[in-house]
Image 1 (cartoon, one colour):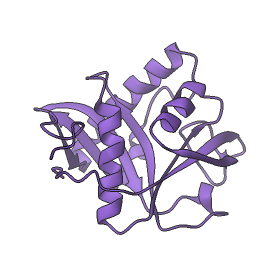
Image 2: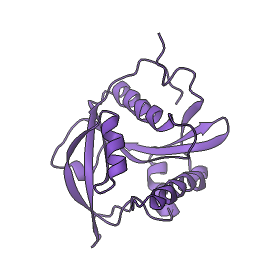
Image 3: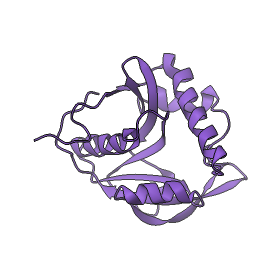
Length: 186
């Protein structure tokens, strides 16, 4: 009994390495451009290496490939200061982005994260987005994520910094970590 989202999926998820900084930044910049063209200020125009390298070095950033072509990226960690008022045993998704490569890639990645979180013994998958990014809010809700409140985080959109004078209002989302029941390459 196969899961139609995952069975035969043409994508492969692998950990990003220091040599992948340009690929990670490229996918994020492509997604940022696509969002800006639709009026959403979700992320900066450019992702400098110092914005992506710490998560890569921590083993938290992943690349998604279709054959040898990089088509997506995401970062998953197990702590997020934006959720400090609601502690949980959760996986936190950041900077999930895809190059327009098939309508199901974003859905597949969210299911992949749910599988990974479940296998790691996490109870929930959490993520957030700029609160006024209506399209992305609807997208997450359509995929079963439930709103868990809006909070201000330090820094411009996509550039969180604890000491920043600028702040961004983000909407937090949560979904139970469940396995889709099919194997994934990772």
